Amino acid sequence: MDDPNQLAALLRDRLRLHEGPPSRRLAGAIADLAETGTLLPGTRLPSERDLAAAVGMSRGTVAVALNALCERGLCERRQGSGTYLTATASFTGLLTSGPVLADLSASVVPDPSHLLLPPLDTADLLRTPSGHGYDPQGDPRLRALLGGDVLITTGAQQGIDLAARALLRPGDRVLVGDPTYGGALGVFLRAGAVAVPVDLSDERAVAEAIRRHRPALAFAVSVDNPTGALPDLRPLAALAAAGEVTLLEDRTLASLVFEDGPPTPLAEIHPYGTVTVGSLSKVLWGGLRVGWLRAAPPLLARLAEQKLDADLASSAVSQRLAAELLERNPVEPWLAELARRRDHLSAALATALPEWDWTPPAGGLSLWVRLPGTDATHFADIAREHGVAVAPGPMFSPDGRHRDRIRISFALPPTLLDQAVSLLTRAWSAR
Image (cartoon, rainbow, N blue to C red; front, side, top):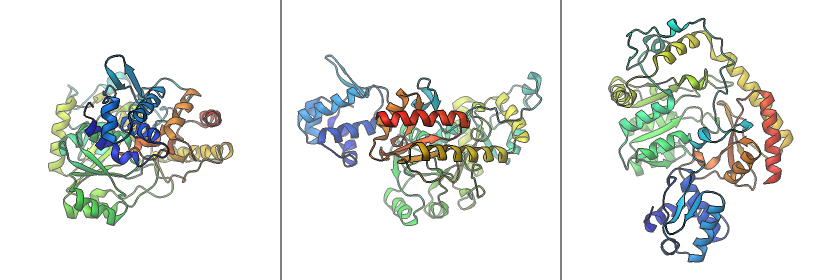
C-alpha cells in the first residue's frame, strides 16, 4: 500500500487500541492490519517520511516502529526497494504452519478414531445416483439425512464463500460479532465487503447498526466461535426480517451444546432471508470436507449457481461415506467425550496457570482464555517456539481487538492436553 493517506485512515482507529509510546502504538496498529488480513503479505509500506507525515509522527518514531515489526518477522526491508509485509499469523496460517508437538490452535476434530466405521468396500463408495458422480446439489441420500432441501458444499468454509459471492458486492457492509469466526472475516475481506463489529445479542445496538450502515448481510454464529457462548440471536433475526437484511447463520457447532439442546435456527424467525451454513466437520471429521447450505428456494438457486461456477460438485465419494457415517454415529457419545475433555483441560489449566481465566463454554470445541498483562500474538509466537500452537485473539476480530485473548482447543485426547499444558506453562514462564 504505497498511499500513506489510505494507510493512515486504516490505522487511525487502531492506534487508540494500543498503549505506550507512539512507536509501540504504531507498530501494534500495523500488526493488527496484517494479522486480520487487511494488509496482505507482500504489501509495500510507504516510506518512513511519507508515513510519518500521514500519521502525524516523527520520522524517527516511524523508523522505530518498522524496526520493531521487522524484529518480529512481520516486515522485511529490501535494499533500494522499501519495507514489505511478510507472511503473518492469519487464520489460514493456523492450517499451514509447521509441525508442533501439541496443536491447540485449530477448533477441529483431531482425528476420526471416535467413529464407528461402516462395512464398505470401494465399489460401495463409487456408487452414485447419477453414475458420473457430478450431482450439483449433492447426493440425494445425504441430503435427505440432513433435512432435504439443502445444497452440499465442500465444507462450511466453501458455504460461507459461496454465500459471500452470491450476496455481497465490493463496499457492502456486513454486521459481525466481535469476536467472531476468523475464516468468515477473511471471506468478507476478499469479497471487498466491510465487516462492521456489533454486539449481535444487543437489540438496540443491532437496530442502530442496521439504521446507520444499511448492511447487505449480517453474519451470526449460533454457538459462538471462539467463545463457546450461546448468544440470544432472536432479536437480530426479527430486526433483520423487518429491515430486509439477509442473515448468514453459521451452525457448524449447533449440535455441540453441552447442557441445552441446539439453539433455535434463525430461519424460523426470518425464513425467506436466512442462509444457514452447516457442516459434518465438527461431529464426524473435517477430512470428509462435507458441509451444506440451506435457504428458501430463490436464495438456494442463487447459491447453487455459485457452486457450479466454483467446482461443479463436491466429492461423491466423501458424500457417500458421510451418509454411512452419519447413520452409524449419533452425536451424543462424541459430545459427552468433548465435555470430558473440556473439563480435563480446564482443571489442568486452573492448576498449572491459575492467573489465566475464561468463562466455561456452553458448547463448541475451545476455551477463550484471557492472558493478564500479555500480548496474545507475542505469546503465540513464544508458545510455538515451545512446541504448542494457540490462536491469538486478534484473528477473531475485524479490528484486531482481543489482544489479551487466545483460543485453545480442548478436542485433543487427555494425554495430549496434559502435554500441551506443560508446554504452555514453560512458554508462560519464558514470555
